[in-house]
Image (cartoon, each protein chain N blue to C red):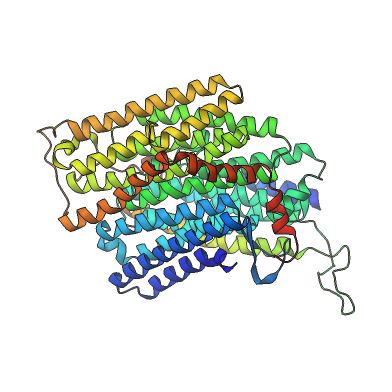
Length: 499
Length: 115
């Protein structure tokens, strides 16, 4: 059972140890990487346990629900923890070869682990106030990671990121307070049971919208996304990659958790709103991406569009659609983080992220081109990669739910994504570098290049494997989706006495 | 009392939002501080107001008597205050740093060259 606390304890210890080794950056690296590796193993074991034995609950200090704070892992949480550990390990490995010495000196490894602590804790907690605290741990670490390095653009990005995310946190806290006033509990399972007996539909709906805005701000859904493209292109690529892989996903996860477990009574209204902002986000995100010429800005705007797919799929609330949306979530984390890592490598080679200042990579770095192509085509949704299957499931679910308009938007956005990806491939990989630009490469030894290619290759293989093994992988997501739609086991295991 | 506090927290929240929308980043910090106080007050109010009934379990009892104050909202507010302090400190440092780098506190003037 204590496996549940494993990721939290390991992240906290590794982070603290890195702080203790403040003057020894080399040792911080080693401790940091060992911590990430250990978390990966624990996450695998946890996933296996949940898969074989169903929902796992740990009542901390043996205070039983609804009084204590439980850690809960259902299939979805176990998937998310495994995803976090995989991305944490890959990005940490990548950062070994390319992180600024200055950033390492000012605590990159400690902050990285504290960030992961917040993410793990958000996925595993079964208590709303604890979720708020996890959000804050994650936010504060991400503020510092974003501003660390002190370049002008980073400070500008950090300001905008901070302003909107803090407002979101306050809304969440206020919502939690009102919810407590309404039902007198903050344990998610307990709230879910008690809220269905509260006969105050207008207040409940208003409250659900407060949470929708709060999580929407974190997840960068349609009207609240402006902080994401303003900040994700500024920090070093390893930081961008871990942000893109995890931070918005925490928002999406919380949204899914709240609107499948707690706010389920007024679905015609709330889920219809979620579906519409999903569709709008898909469309406007991809339009933004097409208008940009900087690698990482393009990728940031695509995130907004992809988040739209996830929450749209969730809003349909059929097992097929929710499973498709979860499939999308994992696929997007892997692919988007990988594209950010690749853009970091390209930055090393040319000293720029701008499409006009890079070129000819297909000739000079064929393996990099191959992995880029795999990830980019997967993002755009070409078979047999993971992006194709995630779109197939969502399209099929939309037809079943009788929403041909949504299918049209999804396929249109998919086509725009493909256009935008071919633009990168054309300008950055096929076209030779324009002669008026002299590249200003940063130091990149062969050893560092190979080291950076290892996690990139691993993640590219993962997206290929997720595509080729889609039927098997889909079963896992289908089970997670069924648990979300019918959370009886979750409620029983959390509330049912000694666990 | 409940109504007064509810209205008051709404008023403070509105002032906070007004300050958040200013271009001056120092006012932005004040806005943030006000909003966090307004939220704390809202939690306090939503948790139910009880006077002169401390949540102490009587010596011969196992549970709290009915009608005593609920300590949980106050514990939550304490946590929120601590977190709010940390965040406020970071915000102020970040804005100070912005002022050093850009020489401006007007958010519209904070534009990095390498965009």
